[in-house]
View: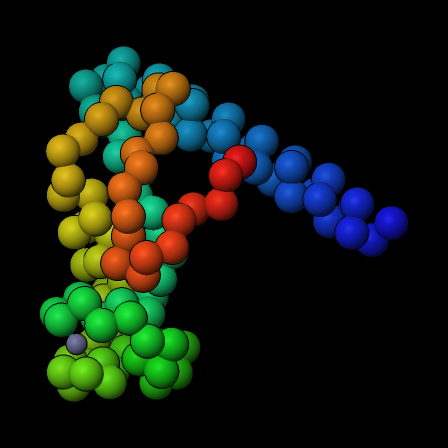
Length: 112
Ligand SMILES: [Zn+2]
């Protein structure tokens, strides 16, 4: 029963985000903007300088220290740079589309 309830809760949450994405896409299209979806997986564990993905890169919640190149930065700023770089691919309108491309960690997003 707990597993079924968790699945139901997940479905409700997915529906909320899907609706938010759809409405945001309409608003941006109406006002001349463009919504770009970026796979968020591992953005907080990826070095924005050398691309190394390692959970140990997170020295703590706030600090990012790359285990490969030694790059040190605020963890949120490092993750934001990774998200910006991922958005730098050819853009697609968001309505009815999901951008599919491999991410640095080699994993794929969970299908909705
Ligand atoms: Zn690095």
